[in-house]
Image (cartoon, rainbow, N blue to C red; front, side, top):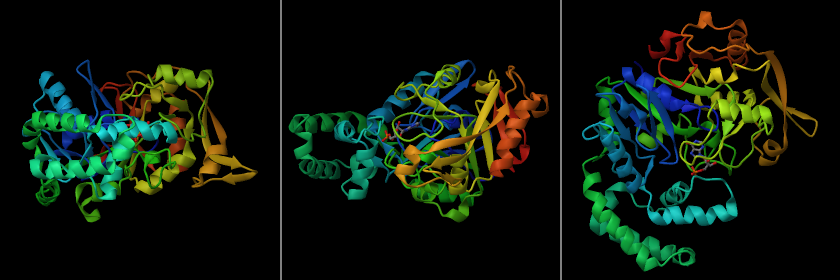
Length: 426
Ligand code: IMP
């Protein structure tokens, strides 16, 4: 198996959890390179549903090892909670999870700051402290995992940070109380965390030298990328495939293939532009049939037709070799299905994704319409057995994007998968 990056090609929630879980059967290591516990990866197997936020979903596969790379921000409380949850379900984490010593740590004041900033910014963040933790990293005031573990460094960094943030935090809490709470929690958590901490960049490069098979998984989708997404309505890291290098400490020459995950329609949770959003009964139908509620916050996801302007942009940014099309079954009952192929703004037509926030916020979608298949595709495991109109929908996406759809997902369970091209792992 090649070293594979698995990225979401929309605004997240494309179904990466299921794909990573499936493909990780063939991998040795599954690695997260950005984001934090803002993500929510849902995996269903053996009639059990697992929602993971921080630990790669590969942990659910026996004998596979997982790494949290330096590009991830880690909330120690959330980490221990997730480890405990897995262990209670009978999944061993010890000796199977490694956390970068240089990943940045999310502390309670990051969560407080997230809430304070949201009141003004209204990005619709998960309020998990992700943005403020990344902001500290780039301000050079962040707390890295190796600093958190060492009590002296921890106290030094904590002191400086609380001094620096005093004016803002004072309005919402008692700072000395907050400080002792943070110190107290650390004292409880640190021994449980220490054993997982490693020089993961060194580890990953040795693994690659030994020809181990690696999956790098993104936490969010491409359109939430801080550089290329719908700024400022984005997350604070780089989910695009290029994020792997900085987020794991590996060179671009070590990555073999990029697999993009795209949902058969589009969803978005949180605020921000969404040209194909349907605020009508069709959108509501997609939400209820697709169970489109945020895995982390429970918020209803906004739904709309597939947007090829955005998809082609995401394919280009990631250098996708193949795609996986997920949740095709959600479109089973439609008479007609629309695909957006361009945007219109002030009588100008856009075929390439516009970068100006004014244009993306105010453009209207231009659609082509395809006949629906109007029947259930549940239980189908071969491409040739799909209804003709479903095949036409898939072919149209391939034709317009020039990228092959190698796998189709038609249900939450692992068995509900159609592998079109087995070469995907070669
Ligand atoms: P943050 O990452 O919590 O700062 O939130 C920034 C934006 O990214 C918000 O619109 C969130 O709803 C969105 N977001 C963050 N993580 C995910 C995810 O895993 N799926 C979908 N949206 C997400």
